[in-house]
Image (cartoon, rainbow, N blue to C red; front, side, top):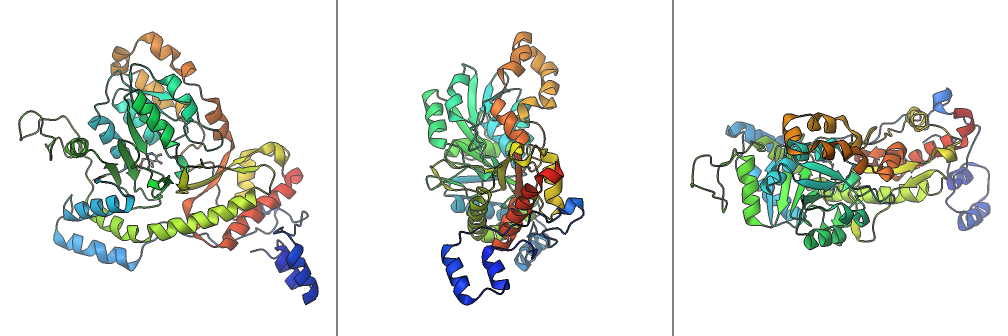
Length: 454
Ligand SMILES: Cc1ncc(COP(=O)(O)O)c(C=O)c1O
């Protein structure tokens, strides 16, 4: 921590103030930082708040190495009993009945939509404020993503706006628990029930997140997870589908395994390859790391939550940094990304890019999102045009439907959020309270110097 940005308590301790003064000050002083507005921002040549790195990610321990070696020695490197064991452990951790491991989160979503029969002419209701891997699977199924705007406070799909977008073509609602915040699953499930729709949760960023004490990813028909390197629970690349309906899960299994019939899903003949499918299996060595990484995920989630709560209490004190909120029904946030809105009007109009550059110069690794929504919301992405120009889309959907698509899928709240998001990767929350103070002090320093920076 930079000594020129001291807490009031530290300031009093390091000055000549006597014990009596300190005792009085401690009783009366709110947790306010002593500010030095004259301190030069690091981006203008001053000392950075911090040069120490934040918590690293991913983190491996001897246990990971010990778990992977027997797999290598066994000669079974493709799907086998280690994957089956990891599935059981993940299902148990999440309170789910069934789990199917997949190659990654993208393929978990592809498999889920396929198992539910989503195809040409179908519509899938989802959010524009998400990672592109939510959208590719919809388009690959030759279905249309139907974008519903976000709730500006929670950043999740706005349940108020979903029903107006349901049509006779709607097949699935695909809510995304974005940044590890949790969607209002009561209202989403109620709408799905009323209109006989299926719900596939994209919980790729929300491991251990909870809605009313039930885990995200276990609340819809199917829940999809990612274990990609940056995720809260990782094995480099990997994914999973959770579900309760055994037959549906068997369909997922069959699809992810080249269409070989599985369990209760035995269409047509009982052997061979009767189902058009893909191959999205997890390998044994991925599963072995996943299991050892699972040992620490509960404790890390607790630590992130504690640090996030502290950071939120601090950021609320700065005009112009507005942390994302949770619905009252959220009993655990996953904090894959700690996000807040950067309101430049409170920073003398300092553009977000310049704010980020100044923050980075102070030693704080902030970003606009995690490759999640770096610039554009998904309803504005080029991949839509690419799909719409394809032979399949041109044949399935009328010219008028595709021509009107952009206008019908405008989501102004999400547009605004994409321009205001600032935040930190989950690893930053795995550090100490002093790390959070450094973040706060760096932002405060920029705030105090806003006139010099803008
Ligand atoms: C919201 C969301 N959906 C889907 C995915 C896809 O997961 P994966 O990268 O494992 O394919 C990710 C993660 O990258 C994600 O953040």
